[in-house]
Amino acid sequence: MSAATLYGLCSAALVGLGLYGLIVQPEPLRKVLAFNLIGGGVFLLLGVVARRGAAAGLAGDPVPQALVITGLVVAFAATALALALLLRLFEDSGQASLRSDAPARLPMDDNQP
Amino acid sequence: MAGFVAYGLLLALVWVRLAAPDVALTEAALGSGLTGGLLVGASTRLRRSEPSPAREAASATLRRAAAGLCVLVSAGLAAIVVLFAEPAPTLAPQAVASLAATGLGNPVTAVLMAYRAIDTLLEVVVLLLALIGIWSLAPDRLWGGLPGRLHRADPNRMLTFVAQLLVPIGILIGLHIFWVGSVAPGGEFQGATVLAAMGILAMMAGLVRTPPISRQWLRLLLIAGPAVFVTVGLAGFAIAAGFLAYPPQYAKLLIVVIEVPLTLSIAAMLALMVAGASEWILQR
Image 1 (cartoon, rainbow over the protein chains, first blue to last red):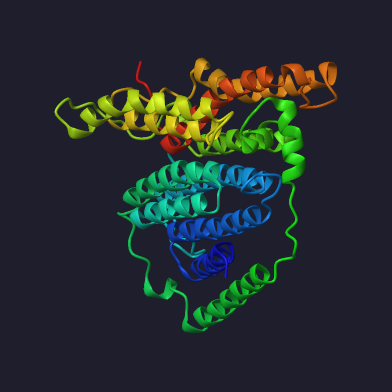
Image 2: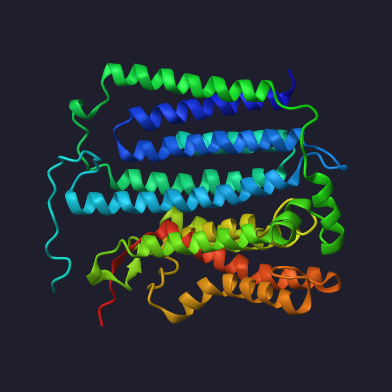
C-alpha cells in the first residue's frame, strides 16, 4: 500500500468522523468543528489525487493543490461567519442552542436609543 | 479546541508528505492557526452558556443510524481511494505549459494567478462577502464601531513583550513568504495569513487599536486588492486574449501588480474576520 493510499483512507475516516459529529453533537460550536473535520478530509482526498497526478516533472498535480488552497481560505471564511452568527445568537438569547423551542430573550433595545 | 490546532499541524505534516508544501503552509497558518484562534475565542465567550440539557443530546437510535451512515460514507470513499483509475488523470502538463508564459517558478502560484485566476478572484470576493456578513451581525446602534474586545496595553505583561518582539519579525517573515511565492513554496494567501496573525497579535496585546470599521481608509484597503484584480482582468480584453489574460511579455509584472494590493487586502480581511462584529462605539 502506497503512502498516498494510506492518506486517502485517513481522509475517508476523517469525513466519516466529521459527519458523525455533525449529526450527533447538539452544541453548535462542536458542529462547526465537525464541519471543519469533514473539510479537512475532503482536502486531504484532493491532496491524494494531486499526489497521484504527479507528471511533467512535478511531484504533484498543481491544479488540485491550488484548489485546496482556495478551499482552505473559503472554509476559514465560512467558519468565521458561522462563529459570528453563533456569538450573536448567544448574545441575544443568552444560550447557544439550535433547539427551535429554546426560550428566547428577544432584544428590544437594539433599534431604539 | 487546542486539539484542533494540533490536528491542523499534523495535517500540515501530511501535506509535506504529499509533496504539497504550498498547501502545508496554508494549512499550518490558516487552517490550524487562525481557525484554531477563532474557535478558542468563541469557546471562551460561550463558556457561560449552560451545558445543553440531556434531552437535547441525540438518542441512541439516532446515534446508531448516524454511525451506520457515516461508516457507509467512509467505506465508499475508501473504496474510491483503493480503486482509483489507472493511470491517474492529471492536469500537470497543461499547468506546466502555462508556467513558461507567466515567468513564475512555482507551479501552484502560476495556477492560482494565471491558469485559474478566476477562482482566486472569486475566492477574494467570497472573503469580502463573509466579512460584510460578519459586520452586519452587529446590532444597529454599534454599526461602524470597533470590532472585537478592547484590549489595553500593560507594559509589564508577557503578551505585550512577546508582541513587541514578534510582530516586526513576523511581518518580515510574512512579506518574505509572499515574495518568495513566485519561485518557491509560499504565496499571497500564506503571506497574508502571517501578516494578519501579526496584526491580531498586536491588537490582542493592545499595542494598536482595532480601527473602527467605518473608516474610509480601511474600506479602501479592503477593496484595493479585488479592485486591482478586476481592473487588470478587464484590461485583459484590450491588451491580451480576454478576461484575466496577460500579455506574455508583461505577465510577471502584472501578476506582481495584482498580488501586492491583494496580499494587503487579504491580510486586512482575515484579521478583521477574527476580530468579529463591532462591539464598541467611539464616544465623541
